[in-house]
Image (cartoon, rainbow, N blue to C red; front, top):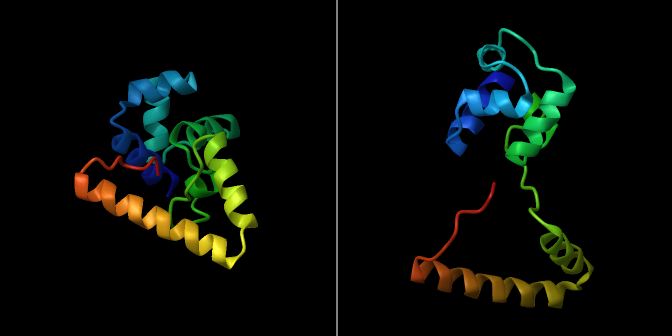
Length: 116
């Protein structure tokens, strides 16, 4: 299961096995064995891949079927914290603004692909 996930994530990012192997400081063959499921990677390598792909180690290990959505930076984290403190009226107002801006962006075809 982990072998399929790391292979798919690598390909989605357009990275080579050589590039990932360098990132993990292992040989290309050693990394290839991870993708083939012939060898298990150590905890440190697992954490490095999770960070590289912005996913959790739980996702890589197959504890979740869907890829979790991780926040990219402090400003996104701050927005979520503020949103969670709003009452229902405030959340509704924010949702209306977000939907309007999202529709505008989609209509202008300037939408950026989220880092999920």
